[in-house]
Amino acid sequence: MKFVDINSYYTDPKYLSIYRLLYCFFLMFFIGLPSFTWLGSNLDPFFSPPTWSLSNLFPGFPSKHFFLILSLINLLAFVSMFLGITKNIAAIVFTVSSIIAHNFWYSFGKIDHLLLWYTLPVFLSYAGWSTHFTIFKNSDQAPLDRRAKDRIAFIMSLLALFIAFTMFTSGIQKLMGGWWRWDREAVRFQLINNYFTMQRHEFFAAYFLHLKSHIVWKFMDYSALILEIGFLFAVFKRSYFQFFLLFGFIFHLSVLLMFNISFYANVICYFAFLNFASISYFYKRSIFSRFGLAYKMRLPVLITGSILCVFWLFCLWYRQSVFRLPSVIDLERFNDSAFQDPSSFAATSFFFTCAVMICLALAAEILKSAKKF
Amino acid sequence: MDKYKLIYVLVFCLLCLNFIADHFTKIYPSVVFPSFSGAPSMAKGAALRSPEIYGITGSGSLVMLNEKVLFSDLYTKHTDFLLQRLQRRMAAGELSPKDPQLRGYFVRRLAELGKPFKGVRIVITKPVYSLVRENLKNNGENDDIVNIYF
Image (cartoon, rainbow over all chains, first blue to last red; front, side):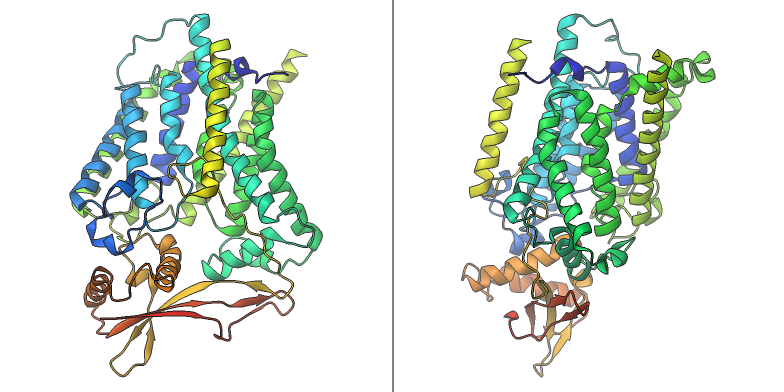
């Protein structure tokens, strides 16, 4: 039996460091950072945590002060991660504090599946995403030996397995839920449900609500099933996995346009598998590389990002009870106590930016392949 | 590399265990994503469940409350699930409508909004969307109702 081609997942730490900045950029510019200060003992009547969760060890929600401290720790860990100061520790603290807080967040009876985006830093910190483009010059930039490369490839393949498995479980449950049945129109039912019970009417929701073609609805049902289940079989090789990630992005974009659900959590993670080497191939031949622009840009980028983080710190201190620290696009809503999720504009801009980046990466890949011949 | 292959297989087995365990109980954090798995028959239309909340006035009449405003201290996306869960727990006898913490919460929230009610009513409506007529119909016959008096 052929085993997963772990070596194909090797990514140079320099490219992972670029991804670290990209990850933080996505959060700072489009998504914002969740705050947990809205939780507290005042919500105890609704405390009903999952059976197997950390929050089930508690009799109710801890005090507001607990969540304020947790949010501060989470924010400071994020800043350290962004600046590349404390390497693995920052990523571990960020992930652990996020998991603890989300344990309580999901103690009302509903669990959102955003796990991937805040567990990813732990994986990538061990793969070396803090070695380049840091605020201080890093000493860990020596050429890597075979063992170090194997370790990075292994960590990246594990991350791919996690992403694939989450998609696979989603697909299997759809299969068990009856999505395969020819007489059922699952996507259509979910659209109707979202449209009327959650009042999600934006983008193309109304158009699809009136779509009656059974063939089209079944095409959507089956393609979602094939995509989600197929993810697990795509981890065998990085190139297959990338192919599924591309279709995964199209899938999430369709979900945004039809259901008005911005599932950014997975999309952010997909970019860790972008072929940065192809993009870099063209950068090295461009005029920008002659001036060392990428490296020189590092300080302004890190300092600008830090200013936003200081503002977020002020938001936490000033407002005490917020659901989300606003991204640059949603900055005007920092005083809005009802601001909970990225705005439609922010979500659309995020997906648009991702689409442009994917097109550029594909173009770079095609041009690189063409030059080989 | 063999060491890594072994760990990889072990991790995969752990993920599978998580998947099996999640089938029987609720776990968090979990790598099992159950998003939109239902595909009910729509032969007689799409049967939906939509919670509503009303304030009960002194004279017994009902005033519909805006969920977003009433539960502005909660994550809005979750309030529908929360109301459905409250109704289910009350119907199953797990939670009493006289629970002092629950009553206290509603009294405090309504007082903050300046709305004097003697109670609230949670109604889980079950409208049906007709695929032929393309309209939503709710005759209110099968609604689940719970009252919380202060």
